[in-house]
Image (cartoon, rainbow, N blue to C red; front, top):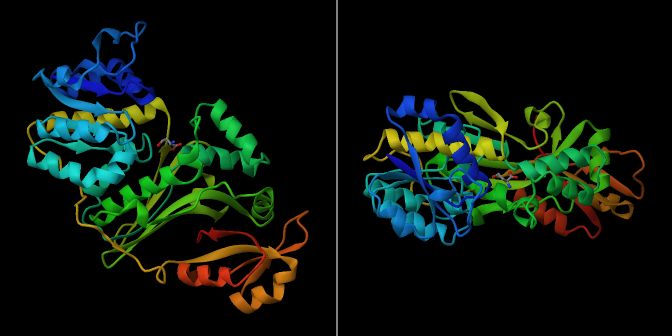
Length: 402
Ligand code: HSE
């Protein structure tokens, strides 16, 4: 049996490496060799050991009936969406790391795969190499999952780890780019879009119904200031870009935003490009997944695990717990958090009147001319309304419960 890779970039190259280095392991599991027959890319790779497998057209790959699985590591929607549909319609399985495509069209592609007795698998789309998604369709299926909370973006987590140690935003971004974590255009990471897609996928799998990315309240890390980190340091918190989905009665409420995370919380010690995800089930309680959330080899390893699953079930459909039925969006009144708010010193009385007497004031070394406080738990809707009534808000963060 043969495999192919569409998009020979970082992850695509990693898949070739995993298939080469772990060739005998893969053969042992499958009972025969899985040959990397084709690489679809517009570029040439003359120095690459698989350089002679490069083709320009998908038709050439589809004409070879020995190809039973194709890895889509092109990223983006175009042409990945059309290509994936065409492949699945021919009964050939697709494994991908493309979270943008999965978040936008995953349910539809799964239906096509089911109708054509093949599989659409996307373990590598969330949490890089962490074996995080498959349990939602296997060992966690019987649980009533009510909460998924994670640090799901490696680039911003690396940047925030640097900023916690004193880097400015720009210094941290430059460092992340130098290390090869952040893209030249880092928008999707720093504005939270990448984590938004990932929590939409996780929320969909946790509830078995499709969570739309538009229903995820998404805030990035670009508004964080040195003062925010000073407050965090002085009050035993760190700051993380947290992705959270709450599930109740068929409704899902999801948010991606920078949170103050108590140092005692398990997510506080997830540093650098590492990711972690805590899943809470009604019988299981908390279970935590942790590992490399980005990076070539780890992500490629997750794609190869899907390839093996698809090949072991060649001619069948591997079940994934995601239906095309849209999940209900949880009312913002049901989504509650405590909020950390910074206001100009002239707004103290108004802030107390607006947020109530039970706010607790916090201080930070060297930050003057403002008041900062943490509210009692309140709904997203109430917080948004309260914020509007103040004129001089310097910033706010949600607080992750310990
Ligand atoms: N840009 C992503 C991240 C890559 O930094 O987490 C892995 O999905």
